[in-house]
Length: 389
Image 1 (cartoon, rainbow, N blue to C red):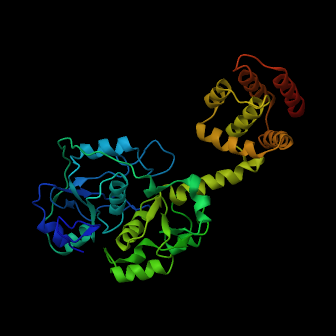
Image 2 (tube, rainbow, N blue to C red):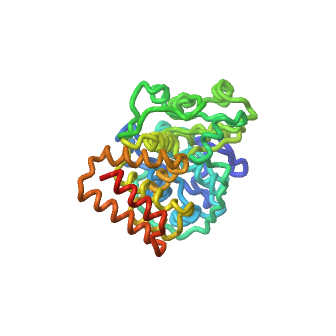
Image 3 (cartoon, rainbow, N blue to C red):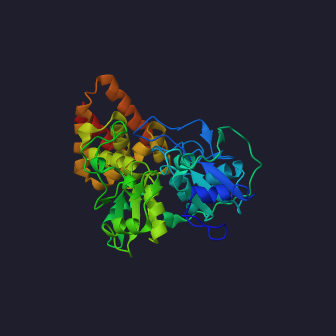
């Protein structure tokens, strides 16, 4: 697709880009990244003239998060975009070295942070090279700080907490961009220790099946592919491995006029968190940190209220993520089940006398965290000592 500056839409052709290289509002971004299924990255050491590197992994993702390519904060995105010299009136074209792979992620991020004047270069660098257009050596540059302001559009993103509800809502359709072999669990996931599986009630549309070599298939073909899976009035939610190729489907769906969102954590997050939740139902699979957190939470709730001091003490002993998933399990369990879980968990770890001494020291310190160890806490403390010795 080609278009004029005034008719800017979702993709541009290499011919359009070449014709507009001299526009002083134009910013070209190289959003290349390695595929999870391959170590390859660069087709060459060349780039489209004046391209700036859009570093998805390190600058435009939350690197402190547990899962890869996690959605950045509004502030992080704004500051990183400004460092690339991007302004509110910039006309942005993004490309990657595979054709159409990671560039739609950059497109989607700009859309999600309120910048609509952004397009994907259809065919990316391979298409540019195919036309024998001029390239230059890749280079690192610094740019004058831009005035870009981010405005987060929450409807563009779906999070783990809402997935199970969405999967049961007929107004939504979840579509997975992974390969059919991965979707059908015929091959293992490429990420180490990540189990195979699919999101509830999801359908499969491998992202490469909507491409013709390096470019998007025709609008008519795209319509056929999407109508085979979803109704025109459904809100589409796209998933993949970690949110990259889901954005390819988002690009195509936006061209077709579908309302759509990307599930940012995708299967990496969902598969991991669901596995952890399943494991929490089996105390003999708990880690020592999970067991410690569970015991401390049980003691903290003996008076039906977990104080801030008690919570702070627990968080000083275990990671917040451990605390949160263990607390979810505790909330489901009866008092009787809680005791049985503790007994089973302790047995599975083969605690020795010194280990138990440390465990009971933790219980005592947590019980005193809010200033005193009341009669109920003392009673359960003594009961636990009797049960576990």
